[in-house]
Image (tube, rainbow, N blue to C red; front, side, top):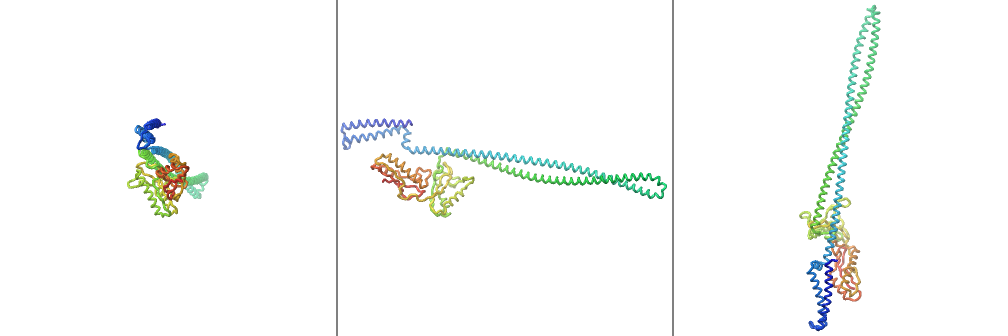
Length: 514
């Protein structure tokens, strides 16, 4: 227990004892002296003075305690309001703590996305390196094939030179054969004239014939060699053509691979550039998010909160069968009312000349819902509907002084839920009970039943209000409490609807005794 409360209780107890003692002494003295006040009988005079002393002494005691303690004065003048403020501040602290945890989660998610993008960047660079290695290998292969083609071309030129040499040798032998043949024919022509010399020359002729046969054999061998060389030349030509075709095909493959590699390299460079741009964008967004978090943290620590999340700013009943144009005007009117309420609380527009409250884009199922789409959805939701509706604008999240207030607008059905004079709830109270008991039965039991009844018929509560469904005048409650305490026996206290009430109306209640 608080020492101040204990001291106050102790002082009241001591004061009560002193009051009892002084009242007893005062009653005895007045009774003995039989004094009269205002023409009253002595006994009545004593009763009046004793009661007056009993009233004055506690009042004086409380005034002395209030003068001595600022905490008692605060408790006396503020009382339940201070307790309610304390509960509200605790709720605000819990809300801010949850918002801080959510922002911390967003920051961690952004960091994880940054790590993923860095990993993708490393993979892209590795792919580019692989493409470079493949291009280098193909370049080396083309160089090796070009060297082989040069070697075969050199061999072909060597073989062609050998064939040319052999052809020249065959031509020389043919000339020599023709000369020998001419000599042989000249010898034959000289046979008639030189028969005598025939015998002498027979041996020479045989020798020459053998030489001619040898030359013919040599010519035949040279012809075979020439045919072989021509065959080899044809084979070398075909091989050269095949090598040329292979070289051309390799060149075409190299060009294709080069173009493909260049295209892949350009595409990877573009991908790398886009990835770097995305990375830079994410980094800027992360920096903006961190700056916004710091700004929000600074605002939550230095500025008062003017709207809690889901707190209502405005509501607007919608008659049935509205056209698209009328529905659009009604939605604009609701946003205007909400903006006016936001300005009165201390909200400010994002830009000069703008409104202090309105829609903001939000994510749903991985898709961004824009401001215009939200307005169009509301217009489509209320247009041509054959029943009464109501639009309710609430704060999308906690808003602090000087900030723009984001709105969430919901559509509710607005049928008649209570008729005028309809009994909403009742409680039975024993007459002659104390005022505290009667007040407790009305405020805790009867009003709780009224709230349960409002929830049962699906009334639209006013979020952020101490009386979300309606209220009863405190004067009516005081009168009912006094009347119940004056009656005898058991009485029924009923809560009755004063007027016809729709789901979005504020419930007006009258208390009646039966």
